[in-house]
Image 1 (spheres, rainbow, N blue to C red):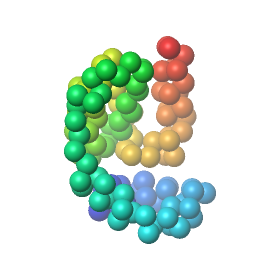
Image 2: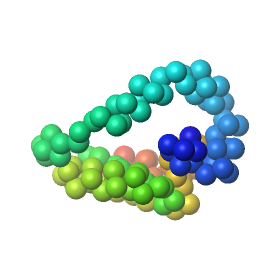
Image 3: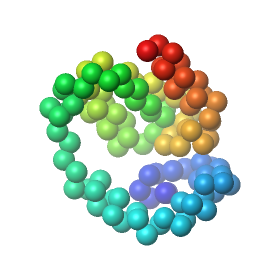
Length: 112
């Protein structure tokens, strides 16, 4: 989490206290497979050009650059997508600030 996701120490400490932490530890053996997919996947923007489903892209304001680049790439490829930046958050805002996360998701759903 610290090396690949670039999760800061304070966020990792919160994460370790969550009920789902035990489940994350149990699935550690799947991480190499997941990382291999990340390393070998080739993004093809044209595959998303005809997407008509409204898409909300959430980004933590304190997210590492590779997350920012991914969101920018998706936003430019998906017609009508919407990016919301959640201040002070990173990759697990649904756990570190569930109120903010829920407000953004519910607000997006109400718009549709």
